[in-house]
Image 1: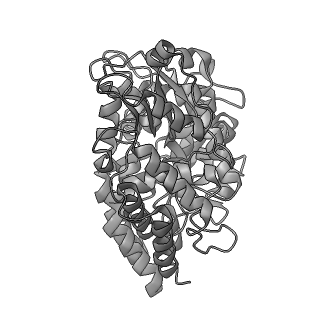
Image 2: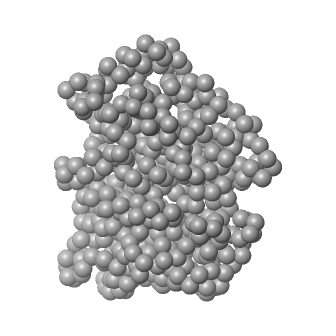
Image 3: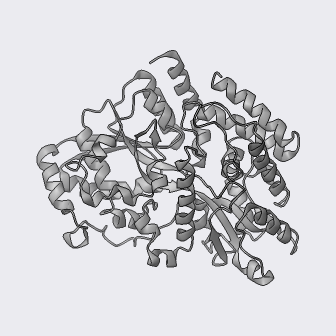
Length: 467
């Protein structure tokens, strides 16, 4: 590994606890609860789709790979808990033994970063995210999955890769290669108080102009009521939230064609000014809001709307925590002058390049993340990433934010189709994210104009990228 790549990995190690904080681990999209006394669902011929049974596939795997032992690095997360509950059945069916090395998110990042610097690893699979992918791929730690996914002998029909939403499928891609199969995702959309909107005859905002107008309408409309809640704390929190406003205005962080910083353009500054204006319609002290404060303000009835991650929806709908439970509507991100876009963040499984057990590792990945095993995964607390679940009318009736999630993920796919994203798929992203969040916060509190903040970002990011 060259010195430049090593430096990038060390940056990832130092900042990993920052970038991971925007992952959905803290409050996942809920799924139908699994009763304490109920046995975990098992794959049966009656419940399996066309294309052969899981059992028949597993028998073949057992004959070829039975006795193989896999070691998996993972962060503590609801989806991992679901997979751990599914593991005994996988081991029984395939004869493949699984050892979980589970740790806190920051510890996982540091562990993988250190292994990447050594050029080897003892893990066969790892829990991967967009923020990790470029550095780990450049370090030679990740195995591209495209050849496996395209091999019908290794990928049964009941896996159904295309059922995973396109925006999720591509979030772990780097330099036109797929380095993971997602199992948990997050996007950002609009939460709004249905009771207040009905009371005052307000229309759900379809554009960003309407969002600001509606926030202004509700701001102070009732005692203690503000227009909107959002997170804007200095650093990655500001970056996280601002990223969903940049692209609807036609702004960019980096030119996808040249790879050069493109933050000083007028559209990017316009998006930052919009966010600074929106914050004026939020509760006092919003400048210091991380996600718990932003969520709490909405859940305690202090704001009419909230721009936030779909991961907040379970908390919002929990009557033990939220006074607005059952009174909330959900809508995709409103459109700006350049269109309606949002982003994706999340987790998936990746195979390691140094592993000598890739066929067994891929068998594990296929089984756990397949459409055939989706209901068991969800029943055990996994997070929805497949279109068949989000689009299920029965599930949508139970969870009103499923449809908004589905619609917003299509907005994210439209953004990805332009070669753009809320996370820059480059090793320097951790450094860039911190610069963006620090300078954006200055515009939000008024210590710099939006244009000045963007010009400062441009200079610093260009320096990071050695331009």
